[in-house]
Picture 1 (cartoon, rainbow, N blue to C red):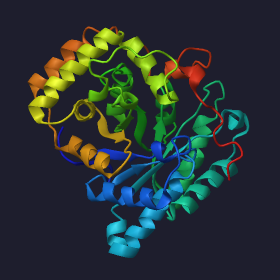
Picture 2 (tube, helix red, strand yellow):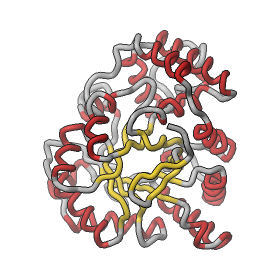
Picture 3 (cartoon, one colour):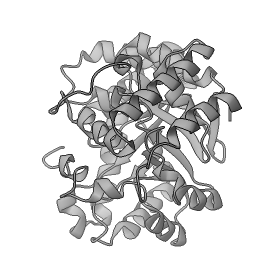
Length: 351
């Protein structure tokens, strides 16, 4: 499935590579705001016209809002309108039991202010705990805001198959779900992809380079000892362990390198291009540390993997026992290896 754009909803088109915002949030070192805005515009000029952020990514909605204002000032409103912005709504775990229409509306209004816009292109809703059953109500309140014109499209983040089916059955018009998908983690294909296909829901995928593990940097490197330098690496090292361990991971890297050499690109580019070939995938969400990184990411959209490429990669994946279960089920076990490293109340105290 080649091409540089994808029609996510009627009349709504995005780039097949989306610029992630997480690396611009607090916790990744000091941010030079002026340089960050310049980098966001350079990403736009490289052909990556769609941006992903969240209410819980400190300062990122404001940075994207500033980039949009600068584009409008320097190049006109028509150009600025080509910048598509997706945000996520992640109500804190401790707020779920008492969630209300006013709470949902308040978060959307806050995002509108930060993003300097009157309508958000896509709001993607995340829910920490299925034992609190009000996620369908919350999606209904978000849909009211869509009907009002404050949101253009609605999506979800990390819902499993039965809960996504429940939301769709309630008549909520979802266009997308954001989820983790990579050569290491194909849980979306276990059952969710078929439900999504039947309902016209597309996948926006993070983790396609596993926090940087799927890159030339880790090829022929010894297995790192814990603790790793950041929570992202810890998270994806657990995925590698579940995939089949370090030796199989190295075989996968060598295979991706061989495919990359055929196309004149690096391992990370092939890893993301592979995800774009999977059923129901509209786009991959990739971070960028600087302008050069953004230009490299844009190359993902230039790569079309052929049958031989896909067969080489499939042969390695076939040796993995794979990550079992539904989307995000491992991460929802707060006492398990995956869930115990998550942060559940990131909005607390934010204004």
